[in-house]
Image: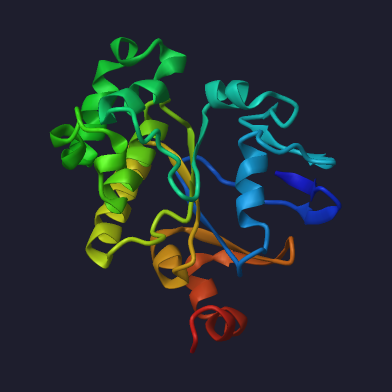
Amino acid sequence: MNSIDVFRGAAHVLRGVTLEVRKNERVAIIGPNAAGKTTTFMTIAGLLKPKAGSIELLGERIDLLAPNKILTRGIALVPEGRMIFPEMKVIENLELGAYIHGGLKGIPETVEWVYQLFPILKEREDQAGASLSGGEQQMLAIGRALMSKPKLLLLDEPSQGLAPIVVKKVFDAMEEIRKSGTSILVSEQNVRLALDFCDRGYILENGSVVLQDQACDLINNDHVRQAYLGI
């Protein structure tokens, strides 16, 4: 993501944002509400188009592509609020995630991997998405994204509204996802959780990157400690 500017209506939401996620890396985007974090994810996924700058995946420019084409290139978004299909069964939600590979028959091993990550989804596979708890819906949203076999997984506020024990399960699964070779870009209000999990981080304020560093160094940065960790 190179020098990206994004407008939403008349609002200049992202201002010259540059960030990088390397292969097999975990990167956090941290910032206050309305800093531009969700806009960043939507722009990478192709749901918003930049007015300036470019986005590349493995050397190929993708910001001019439609969202479905970006998905086929290997970027999958788990949106804030999960946005599962509530009337559809768990297995049907997963199958939609696999449509670019021809559905579940195209990648049967992937649905089994999702079930290994989140065993409760196997138990619930014939239940409607609306019947799941908030934590189970988040697991389903992540599982649905994984069905596309992404190279880069975008996670927008994955712990939002979840109980601590469920948050641990989700982040344990995210570590297994990273071990599988998938890079992860995560936005997270729980700054300590994000920096403990990630390798590097970017601080986004008022639509601009104001700080970037190794996660361990950001934890000890005076601005981060005062503004985000309450220390």
